[in-house]
Length: 441
Image (cartoon, rainbow, N blue to C red; front, side, top):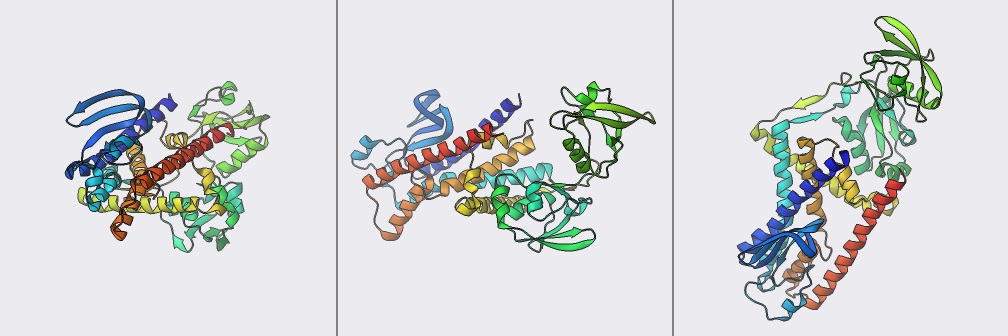
């Protein structure tokens, strides 16, 4: 069921983005009296799921959910309609229009995607406001994994600044480190201020999703709120509302110490000291091979989150700022892909990766935030100067406008084929990474 919810969110999000992107091309084409022969959501090689014709345009839904397209008359695109291109140019064709009009037609989809992202961010901020975890609320410091320790961090550290710049939102610490290739972290450790040097060796690991930096949680009170499926704790007699006091007579100050003890004894039997109705009970529990008791608790009371409400007028600049920052951050991510030493190319993913960013339960706030983010990605990717993408067409039109010489149609045809081959290989590589990661889980 969780997979179906994610797939449904992905398809809905892509459908919105594709339709509006193609509508941007369609709008400018119609504005300049250029004939649009087809307008499709998804591709339709061989057949269409649904189609109808209105005026000069055929509208439809294809069966291959890899995007969509508008077929503009007199334009060399993925349809590779050579027969039409052999005929003399007609006034209503793309190739007969002035360069500045062709440029706007090609930029239409990109402009719509950027505009859509900003509008969504404004609407989300106005509707739900903003919530974040302030750094000062992480009063017990952080918990790090092996990569975090390689960075020079320790459990209990309180991160004060990244490259001497204070970060207000705790969840932005790791992105700031990765995207800005941070060199130093200023932390409070055992009452002292320490400057930690971040080694270059950790960045490829951080880009692969390693290097967890989480708020440290206190252990007490650990009150059982529920059980997992096939819970060994429930089978041993634990109940909701029980408070775990100790394990094998060992008491813990922090939750990570408790988890580490269980991991050190995974598959073994431990004895839990449990408080129930003011009585202390000794409950033997056989841990799973992963070192789990199979109980859940609630730590929501530990941290003080900050919430900001916005009026309609306040949400407009706030949404624009968020759109600009998201665009800047994604450009930084894209830059990393072209730096071989970071090995960021190994983190490229396809549809499985994109689908996995959606939550397993339908949440409109998350859905719209992710749709805005994907809209920015779609805009930037289409702006890349690669033949077969909008950016490739823009590049050739700009060349024509600057030099006064229009590339030959044969050149544009070969460039289109080369671009389509490149994009197909990139698609195979990205989705291949997804499959490899599935088998390595």
